[in-house]
Length: 469
Image (cartoon, rainbow, N blue to C red; front, side, top):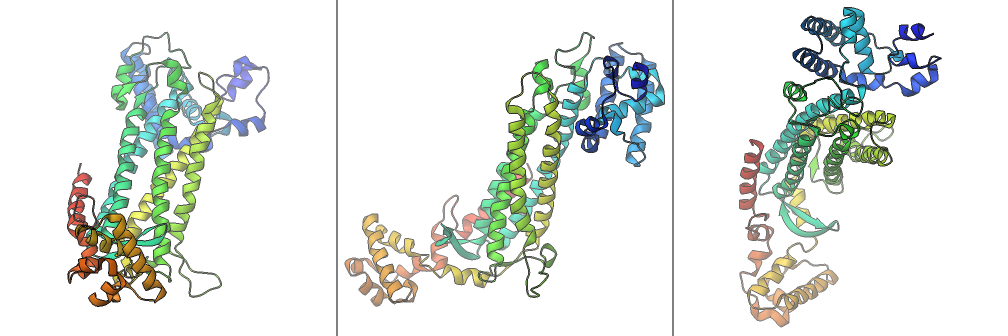
């Protein structure tokens, strides 16, 4: 029975008296998704084989045979000729079985001094490191597209909102730079997460290390790891790095969701601030006039998907004792889907942001509504000696009168304004309207972080500098 089981390639089967059922094979197999790590697995195995040879744990001839066999397998995978077998459970056993078929006993020696536990942990870290680098690069491109759009509209005025109510005028460039700040923080989080991803688990073996005289430092250097996981139990069972990455990814998607919500509102015919290029929108199957912002809506929806992956990974780990448990097979699909979702969203949003057409007139018209410069009038009075709370109350009273009379503060002349504010009339001069204009309001916020066009342009220069770092 044992020899028959081994013919099927089940490397652990000598311990068992009957073959695993087909239902269990399907339930426990991960090859359908972890074959994505195939090239990484080969890279990891070649580094391990080189170390085994250097340490004289295997012969140089065995290493040469392993290298030659892996080169053939790499070609087969690249060309789509490799035959993935469900019976072999995962990417590691599929590659090892093919290697043994090609080179014989030398292939069986490759697994000396390691376990699938530390092997898979190493593969995931190597793969995720590459994906983090790609995400950081894509974040840079997105930030660049936002900065370009902000630069074109550093003087374009639109209403700023709190509680989705008109608050104070800002510039569109300033508004966009807020998202540059968010995605810059996302970049820093990814780079910081990468430090903890880039630690080598290989050499921890199943959980206790190995009795062979391995050199983990050589493998770490070969594979470009910054350091080595120092506790063998933690090395094989740690998935903090995957959770940390997914948390950072969830924040990226949250920022996309916030931006998406605004794009959807701005594109609405009731608002009309922007237009998205047709290639990012769809129509209706029944209403011929419709142009729907499907990309922002989907990004808003996919945010929940990534958030769900974060909760799934946290829940996966919360009850696991040391060391490795089969539960950890379930870490790959949410991690892979998180990477794919973030990468695709970054790519499409970078192109979509560059395509945005701005309706500056609609933005300005909206900013003129809702008494958006009322605070500037209060500030004007404060600068002339009135306590802020008194100035606030006086202007609020004037706003109430204008609302009742269906007028706007900016529609009043100086005499009318003084009559609406009798208690502070003596403080109102001809220059009061300078601060109450939209341009005067935004220009007055001329400090670091303010919405004055001068500050926006300075912020754009600073933001471009960070892109080159």
